[in-house]
Image (cartoon, rainbow, N blue to C red; front, side, top):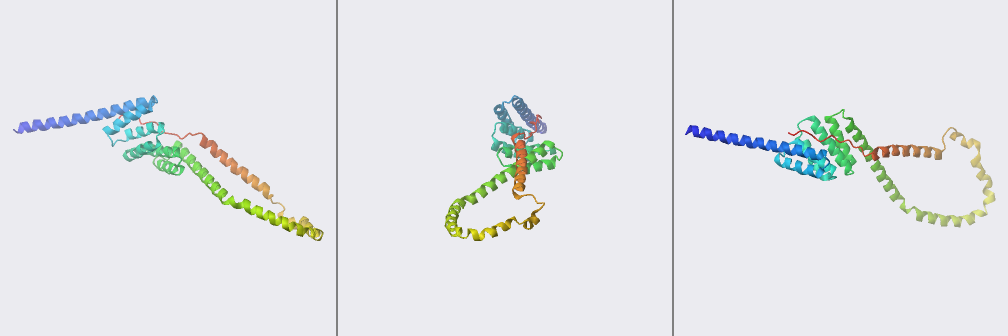
Length: 248
């Protein structure tokens, strides 16, 4: 009787272990097939294989990370974001965590949320401080964030100045009325108007740049900075780590 129980338990253990091995083999096969399709730029096919791998083993970094990459390539950024979040949660090493955070930054950039993107790049750099691609992406995100803020400020300023035209019209009417009254006093005020040309009065302004020229130079510098930012941003060169080729 005891021997029968031992044999039964042994068979159960063997069956469970073989089932586990089959599941692992199936998972590795699905990830491998997904990688092959991804490398062939069949991102729909890759997504399908990675999804099956996730269903086979939902607690592994690789399938979530690679599925995120395939979804990202298909411009399904919300879905990609969800997979990268799971990937960084299940990551076991610093490089894996850094890669998932980096790709979260890329995804938020594509969703035009540079502030969040910069935050994820910063988190990635904490895991991998010497990654120049992540550092470059962080700088691009900060530039984009600044550009968006400048546009917002310009829109706010233009909105505030909307009522200026009506006020100017009223001022012009008032000026026309006053003009007739002042004509009779023209000769009387002539001598007073010449005081503005007194050399002594302008001594304090010697050596200073004319205000118009100063503003022109400042605007030129500002435009140059904006142009530099635009050149960087228009490259669309957010560096992205390669898909994880591991089959486990």
